[in-house]
Length: 68
Image 1 (cartoon, helix red, strand yellow):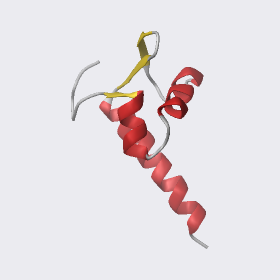
Image 2 (spheres, rainbow, N blue to C red):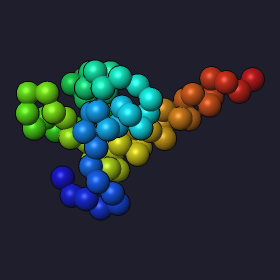
Image 3 (cartoon, helix red, strand yellow):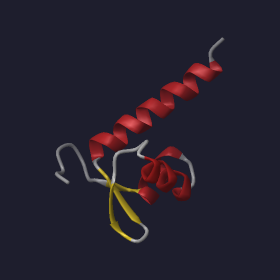
């Protein structure tokens, strides 16, 4: 994967940025809800752009739940 705007994420680093468990991010990758490439038995690589898009979507969902 190309590094256009920043370094690629792995499931653990994206999970850390989102404040969730790495297994949750890996499950989303397996399900195709986060675009990712599996490079080893337990390693998922997510492009920087896709990771940022998922983080933004997650933040928006969280914000929408808290607003009246």
